[in-house]
Length: 72
Image (cartoon, rainbow, N blue to C red; front, side):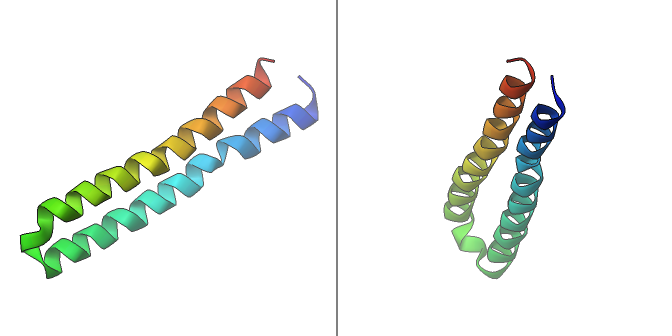
């Protein structure tokens, strides 16, 4: 593995950082929404879980790309 591949794999793994920040912000906004409208908790929870799944998938894609770059 040469130096550029290692740098590329490191950058690909950084997608987890963005996904983590995004999921934290989404969760905090969902908590605020539930605090303001407790009767809408189930709807807010559904939307939150779908959004968190999509955000987590971007982190997993970045991890898979990094693994492919390292072991190729």
